[in-house]
Image (tube, rainbow, N blue to C red; front, side, top):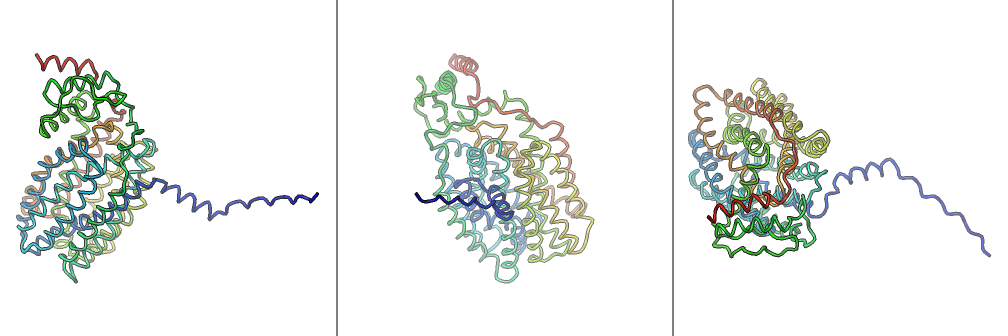
Length: 481
């Protein structure tokens, strides 16, 4: 008999191995989420740079401050018309197909902007880009919400936000370089090629709703709830939304074939409105969370012009500042999302908005490039942690089947509130000076943070069944009568 040799014990993992494993675990989000992030980076390179350079591009094409006000007012008005339709499309049609379509539309808009001979010719591309945005926002929110486990939702949104933060590094640097040395038109052409690449990446994503075993958050609807919603829809002469089915998957008796997309749109909006009215705090949340859309539109319209013409920062140097902010936002996306999962979304969002207001106000008091560098580092840390918290908070409050419409409604309220902002900003710029415009932005941000902390809802969403069957039956009888 041969002697058995004792097996050597496996060496304990080194400190470096444990650290690498720890870091890798932070990016354990799954294939779908990795594809979403990669496509977001490719699709939003130009969009991120446009936030800084589109006002300067309009000025380069002969636009005045009043022309900027007109252009961004048109942008807001077009988005107001399209945004609710975009949310409905996400809830109603194939999400993966729409997800592939949005960057292709953005790429087409970039090409139209690249060949524009003067600033009014930017408006056709603007309209196409607004259609892309009206679908893109709800579909990003809806897909990420469904993929992410509820207890890690802010972390998933933080990872998604990393793509935009990386765009915030690369986009301004390349945009500023092209603006000064090659021509911003060629940057728009390169961005269009990236956007078309993003369409292919999104084709590879698997929508969790297409999995027959997928169960929406809150569970499947009961048969009674499905019958109730179908009865209401039948009384109105339209079909119930596609999720209004029995637990076994068959559409309830009494539903009819749809009359058309317009009827379906209004039926879907009616069901969403009924849910929002009976869910405590939802309507107030939609209003409060959109107050900063006013300050956001002021910033989008005039901030780059302020930095270039008042603070005297040239475009390429301004790109470095924005890139620095984007670099700081990347770790803030991850840490901010995880922090919001721990301390609560309301507290995280409220503190971030107050700090954002403080940042904008302080920006008007400093001078010199080094001081601006410090300020933009702070900006990246604050805003990098803010937006994942907002998205996670919104997802917590809304059941899966309404998330596209919910984001559409959020953005609709936001763009309506922002419609007068460009014209108001132009008046404020001329009447009180550029600094007063930034002070207004600071005040809006800080007040929003305080209001959200005091009045923002914290409760869980209503179960996915929307309205109760008795209420739906009563409404059906009333409508039929």
